[in-house]
Image (cartoon, rainbow, N blue to C red; front, side, top):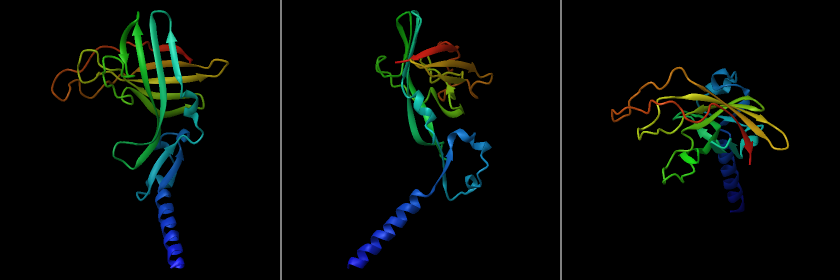
Length: 208
């Protein structure tokens, strides 16, 4: 009986090891998925996980504030590990955020769920996984609609440059895409929000 129990434990251990071994781990800072030269990427029997192995995201995982007396932005980053890319077998670590934006003391956006209970999706507006360097990231950029429509038509790319120091800062630089969404209508046929973004394109935020 003892030998049978040992055999069962060994089989279970090998089975678990086999499941865990399914992930092909590729450094997230090694380039984009399309650039990867790893032949295992084409092995359809394994999941591919682009992982932040050197924890470059770690330095961003704080709350940051920009405040010039008129414009106020507070943003908090979180790391979502092994996020599935659509319905594919590819996974990656992803940086998500929540933000509060005010103009002259008036709240425009609040994804911390304090703006009248609006339930914004925190990984819908500003998120991404592209590592440009050990101190620079590029994220997908969007803002909530202001006119009650389903979403904005605009889109952009946000570069975050981390600057170390006694009080770390990040330089925020946004470029609006020339090509916006593929459709300017919502699923119900109504128009998307066609207005420009309201959060400034260039700022320096201070770590809190």
